[in-house]
Length: 94
Image 1 (cartoon, rainbow, N blue to C red):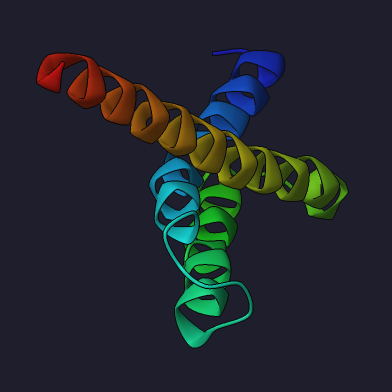
Image 2: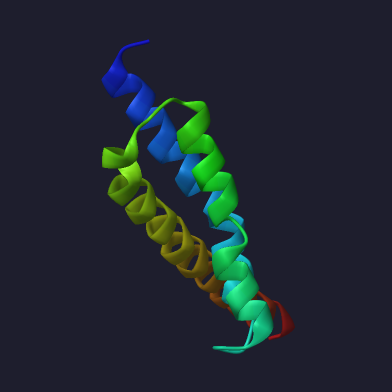
């Protein structure tokens, strides 16, 4: 596996790790302890992922960006799913 492929896999895995936490964050009140936990709990896993892939300090900004992307994408997808589910339930009751 080339270095570029390894970096790409690390970024995609970091997004995949933080995606469910972003979805959970969308259900919590902003700045509550659950919200704080949903943001900060996946960070050790992302750090461990970077270290296990042997990526240096120069790769930290990319991992941070991918963790933020996973949080935002997870929240956005969950809100989209929730809106579509509410719409389909409303149409089913008509």
